[in-house]
Length: 138
Image (cartoon, rainbow, N blue to C red; front, top):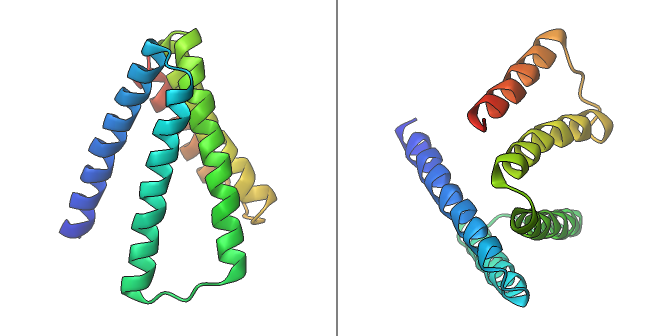
């Protein structure tokens, strides 16, 4: 349990650093540097995942690679859009929209793609999560 808590805290800190850097990039308005930043970031992530797959000897399936590739393209597009929008609109507007939007998209995706059943309790939990993000971003 302690290992997971440390990992979660590390992820939170690193994600915060990435968001700060994304905001910094949007303020500088460096154009093509955004693609370079994202390209390097995603390449490092790819190498890290590949290293874990090789070290842990996970089996590689074609469908898994396809899903990873599609997910990577969608994630890259979202990050690019996020950085560009931060340069146009105030972060007090963009951050909550992206945060809440992420929760909504994941919920819809889990129901539509994975056919998950959503109970009233789950809906209440999602609503509280959305409200929490909204209040944190005010």
